[in-house]
Image (cartoon, rainbow, N blue to C red; front, side):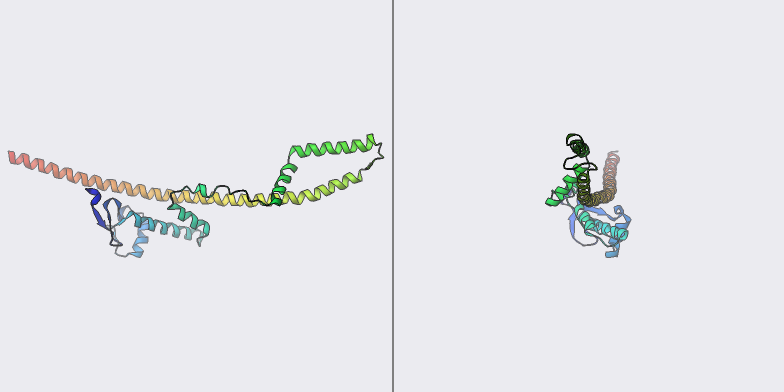
Length: 235
């Protein structure tokens, strides 16, 4: 029976189910002022639907972000739009698919191998073999006798080629870290805003429960009065 009861919104004049009623007393002051700005006749005795309150919550959050960081960016707009979505926002900002170019893949592999103990030990063994071959096996009369000019040339060329490749990989890693930091910021921002909205919803539920308890107490008092009146009549 109670599900068929309706009320009329104080700002739109439309009828909504009674269960969707939100009294103005339970609305956060910032959101109440925002509603008051659009509807000057709205006061502390008014009521609106929860769907209307959700719209003004979104406006309030947008205004809050604008006051904090200036004009809303695409990042903040995506966070606000995700507040009304049932899907987890974390799934939207997970690591993207590997879309590296062939050169970037090579740069990452070279940087990973060049910064490992495998490369250091292998290169050290290669130098020892090179020196041993020319000094002891070829009696310093081989293809690169002491002071190993060819070996120094190879080392210089290797360093000249390896350094920019490693820098390419580091630059791409920095870009990846910046993107990850941006995603972390988006998740933290949404968490903060959802906590604010959850706080408002809890306040609304508490006020709604209090109003229901008051109505129940009124009914109980009326029933007690009826019982007492019947007892008095029997006397």
